[in-house]
Length: 399
Image (cartoon, rainbow, N blue to C red; front, side, top):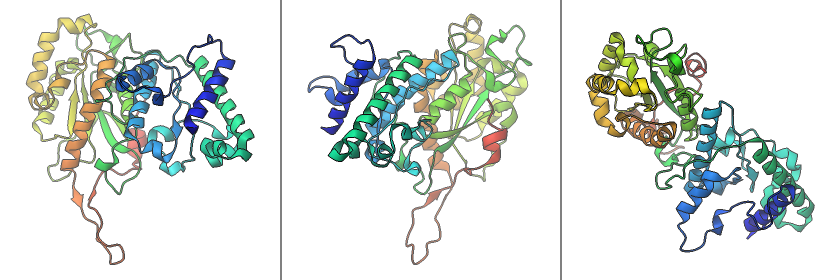
């Protein structure tokens, strides 16, 4: 009841501040869906076309898998907008329904740059729920809702996030992670490594079109000119929206041999440009990598069919890929067949990341802590990479 009142009040302010025609819907709230309507299809359509996303933050909100799916669906549109325009898109306007301590915010919410104090001190301490429930705060409630409506209209005018393809909510992951599968004693985003296998402008195969490449392998952009941002950084933003902390490296500089006595420190995503296999030395290194037992590494092979040069060499490049990475391609046929667009890459990525994460959890070293009489028995813990590695944050991640 209280959320519906807030929604009506917000819509009234938005109608007054814009030139929407009378009777036009100013917003959408998923509780409006009627019995018998395909709720997932309707919600997917709205999330693919709305101009602003307004999550009502509360501990219960972040505990909801469905809310996490909605957040991811809209955040994906922001990431794709930035990839195409090379300009950031910030169309998520969070509202405090119930105040949430900063340490309880999941990564996607923690990363939002938003000044809640502009809506009033009482709003920050009590949230909209506290203001709407108590009559003595009626004035503070009206001010907060009015300021929120102004912010929504301002963001809608300033940020033109293009429409996307409606997603199948049975396949959409939650932006808030899956804590039941994570280390129960860990906090913060889970680590993952994104490794790029691609040539640079300085070692391209003879005759290869240079417009897809840069000074570093991480600059490879297979979907140019539709996309203006390197794919590694699009992948990094997408896995961040899945509550991961991504490190971007190049295969040429970081393809260390496997030490069979050491457990993996993180799952890994290997993004391969087939043109990289034209280099004999790199192909030998990839073949050796494939021969090692690394099931926690998922492989994705983008292949833009609008790239006429790549399409013409598809048979030769595909044969070299199959010869070089037979083990990895056998583990993930969907990734091996060639990902034709950024949208297809975005749909596939959660699946391959989840596959890598599951394999990592199976192979990471487990050690039980020494329980003390006062602590009792504790859960075993998965050992992962240090959370404050300087090489992870600085030397190895570039943009």
